[in-house]
Length: 143
Image 1 (tube, helix red, strand yellow):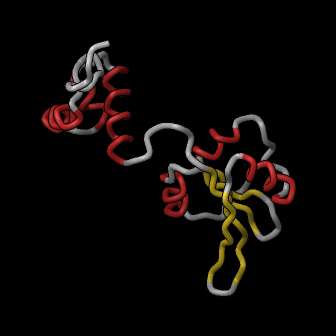
Image 2 (cartoon, helix red, strand yellow):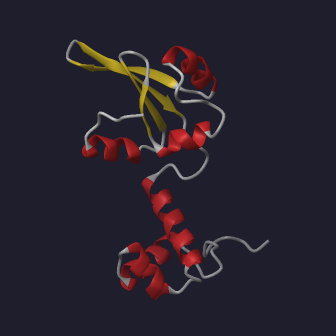
């Protein structure tokens, strides 16, 4: 599937937490972001035309929007609801920090380096999110 999008447009579409599938004016898929590929998995063949895919995508909760520049029709975009997980930027940041901490055995210097932040910034984020070495919130009750 050849993409007609600029790197900036791809970066913007890739940042969406929702799945995005873009169809050209002829109904062919020209772009899918990672959340869309995750939502679809191996269940749908993206080489199908929009007429074949759209009913199946609608069953997944997809919303269709036209793509226009002025009065010129460029195609359509299907937006799929995000998979369960973090939806706010803060929640995504917290999840990324915890995952990276786990990957590095909760060694703060290594984790900070992997995240591209200072140890002080990492420490402040841990404090702000109330995280401890066991991965639980400071205020979480022990079960």
